[in-house]
Image 1 (cartoon, rainbow, N blue to C red):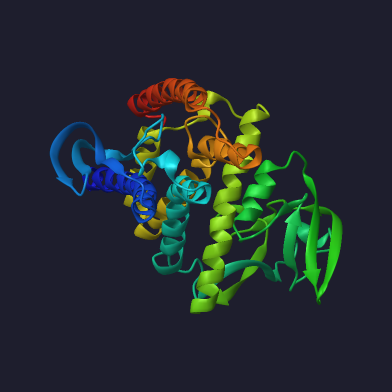
Image 2 (image 1 turned 180 degrees about the vertical axis):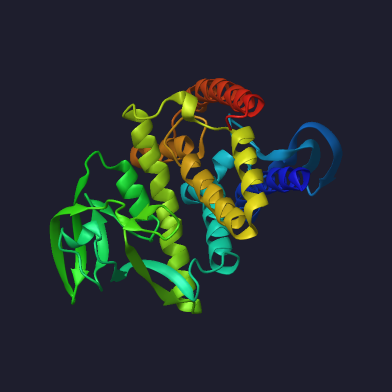
Length: 346
């Protein structure tokens, strides 16, 4: 079972990367841009086949992929080169990989991830509060829809845990919607005081559930996707702010390990994690960093402002330097992943 989970995780990760590259591929093809090569996998080539000017390659390692376009990283006189396409078309081609990741993540959340509660989706609206709960002292009431905690907007129920974990205080400012109006509760404690019947303690809040209609499934999926994308930015902010270090990052090995462990628990959690990583991959690729799609978009936007492109040789140098740094980071992070795997700390 563990081996099957690992294989499933590796294949799922590989599919997410292929979907990303396919987004570039299909928009380039439809836009008249020549695609020289399209890879599935990485490493040595097992099979290859040329069709309509594109070399399709199947490679040994079932992770990764690539869409290599004519003139993508340099000048080309070919009329079908990437640089010859209209600016709007090039922006769409570059952004299409991330858009495909967002689309796949949203699709999984709508059609593959089952409701979180017994009869529907758990939402951040208080259905009942146990006697003795600490939130009663802060003025929280049954029926309150929790909007934010210490300024952190709650999109889905799980955001309550994220907000509390991110906060540096024990007393919280909570904004709720009560009877159609917004109420600010300035001193709410979320302390585990209520007996859970199993020797432990809990906060003592029971949240409401929304019926799993198609309309709400779509709404919940969109909110979850937005939440997943936001968590990437929150994590980056915490990394820059020093709360986390480079040693806390995970690469492909860490991602696959986490997915494999989750697959052994239940398929719902696994699919939700796949959706999260798909959206995560899309967001990360849109960061305005050299060698990433976001970095390429920056140069295209500069071209739109200047009315002329940045000389390819300068753009190529920037992306090459960024790629070198990115590869160095990936090697280091992968090494840390393998070390954690070997020491059982993954």
